[in-house]
Length: 177
Ligand SMILES: Cc1cc2nc3c(=O)[nH]c(=O)nc-3n(C[C@H](O)[C@H](O)[C@H](O)COP(=O)(O)O)c2cc1C
Image (cartoon, rainbow, N blue to C red; front, side, top):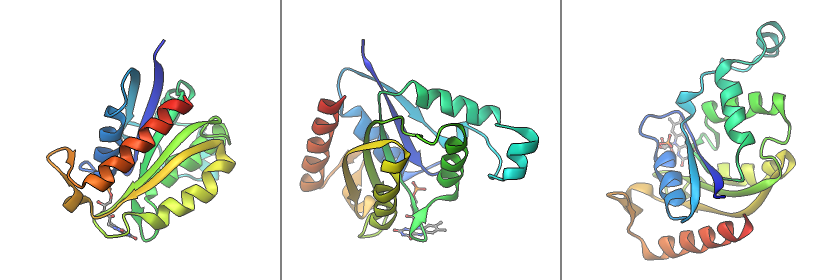
């Protein structure tokens, strides 16, 4: 049976470059079932312990958690907002952690970040690399993809060095499944 790989763009932007990148990377892998998550499809309120106590978990959260339950591995690309997670991603992460602290289910995770800037989201990537292992992530590899609009054009990585690095990471990720 084919493995289920969940891709997550860590942003709620309709034109998210992280969603574009993560789905591009997912599509580089053959013989898997890709489950592409758009955070906009899973509605949940801003996390509040009071809402949790009074209303429980939203349908959107439960649906997202079900997708995660079915995953054999994750490819995640994080948007960087002021050096940290986007609000939409952090909100989903906090809610998910209330259902199961091992959000990433001890499964392989390929962790990416991109931004229009030269550091390509390296700061948020470092935060996630420090935190996700405590949330059940087996990190297989990571990469910040710099200057997105210079290096990614017409749905292709146009920088050969970056492309080779992504292909190598994907190879390692596939092996770990
Ligand atoms: C509130 C805000 C803060 C941002 N902070 C950063 C930052 O710290 N570092 C960075 O490289 N880009 C930053 N950016 C630019 C984002 O990287 C850019 O909007 C990118 O498109 C976000 O990813 P997305 O398209 O997947 O949502 C910021 C953008 C916004 C709206």
